[in-house]
Picture (cartoon, rainbow, N blue to C red):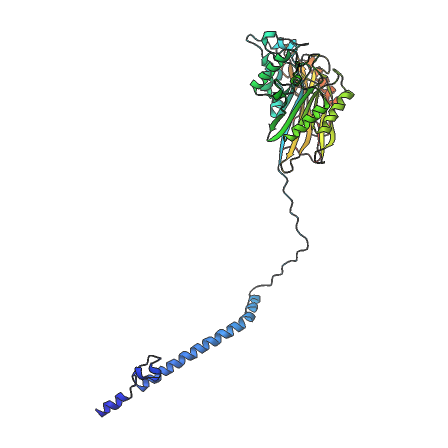
Length: 456
């Protein structure tokens, strides 16, 4: 019993150890067990200390060791020093190109009416068929309708007081005309009623018109056509109406030449947002191949007022054309264009020079960023009116180059070919050309802006 008490007395309960607890969870154990526990505790302390020492050493050595390691692993890289900034080309401004064609007087003499007569009415399609592809290919085609369509009740007649069948205008529109100007000396040949009916017919065919009006409100409107998103204004004026006058109190029925009013109209067109202003002027001396001083004065006045293109008519023969340097409203330079007379386009006048005309081709470009519209190129297609054709009496407008290039051109005799060649020489000599190529073999280049390149 005593021996048991001695052995038990060596065991100190955990609850009575120093500080009232057994911090290592040893509890009551014999001396050997206690020694092992102490040794284990020592190892843990040594391990913790070693780990801390290694960590401190690594943190101290890493900034030195890492660069050395990197240098050993990779070759050094030397970046070049920038000496000049690289210039990156600015993309070109967006532009819209468009073409306008214009022709001279569309007349209809008695011989033309007789030639077009059919069993059921009239057929003028053959007159325009040879040139229709070039007219319809343009974005805007303009002609001067120097006749009226007053209806059959008063009879169809040619000179001196014209009245033409509706089919004539229908054929012109089918061929590609978009605008027909009406301010000319024959617009009142059948009075105000004939003028009004003519405009009714044009409206019914969907063709635009300018230069005459049925009401004061209509007279106050400027024709502004939308051409591929570009606004093109067309104005038209005449020197007179062969002694006829508008009714009392209705002077607005026909726009007559008045430089002050014309300049006001050009400015109004600009105020309406027109990018391009075209002024058609029926003026000059008949059958004279050079413009009169009065013609030139009013044409130049229109350019000074802001017009971009001036189209002359009335002499019934072709007169020269020219480019004119001018300025825009903002002071920037621009190139305007004047043709003093486009001559006849179709008629029954058979005399030399009067049976010849042209299709004027104008190419423009609008800068969609700056808003400026620029004349890029001018060319023309000489045409000649053949009065025989397949039936022996048709009046056909023929592109002369097409006829000369085809020795078997339908309906053209040897004598007519000789006349066509003379018309070509007369026209190209009178108007001139530049040393430039054309995508249309029947077209003669007249002007190219600097740096011009044909549209792709």
